[in-house]
Length: 279
Image 1 (cartoon, rainbow, N blue to C red):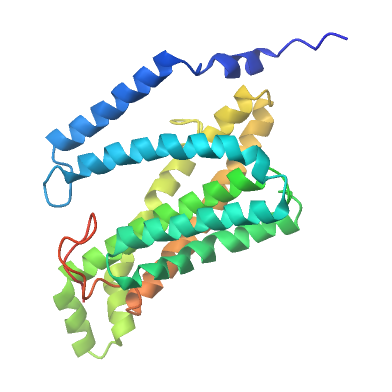
Image 2 (image 1 turned 120 degrees about the vertical axis):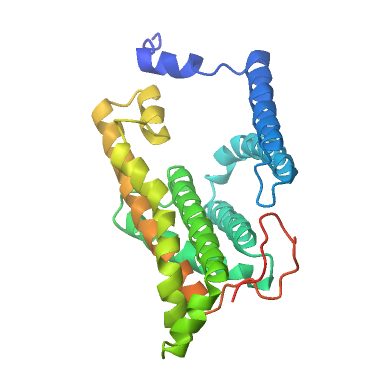
């Protein structure tokens, strides 16, 4: 029996980005443009061109990592232990990336807490309710999206909180002189700045369908799903991300306020984005 004809959406998915030399050339040009702009505009914390190298490295790493994942993902999901190991690797890399982006000193590992606090309860709820099968390929992208959201919120919240404490150190000391506990004084100063980490997720959720059509929605449409189903899945992803990021920001703010996550003792210039030690 001949195979049924492909749907128009499925056909569109096959020709959306054909894998050929033209695609490789366009990707190389786009990466070169990004590197050149960052270098010429000196888009770095200290006004140097060093972040251009980071952009180039990030692009090349993304290509290698996605190629490896594309080859391994089908094999990994066949074994429960391999699936758990792959998810643990995703989490470990996120912790390392977020922690070292927030601070170059030994307290970076505390970034494990806000990421875990945001992601694990949400993933557990999805698995326990049966919305996401525990042994299926769906668990990898869903968990990856949530870990990525927690990573971003942790980095933005932690950096903004520590930057604010360094800039307004005098106000922290003044609050302590008035009788505030160390934790409460830091919390009052850092909370408004750290809460800005929620803005990207809020803006994406508020403008979805009007300004942007996020990846989950577009991917399901191109895969042949109905617009209604694609919309429901995208709504689920956005709301789950809001919960994950809110928990991550609250947790990293508490760690900064309690002095668990700080920049004291960091050598100047250690790690990209490193700043002077905070209070």
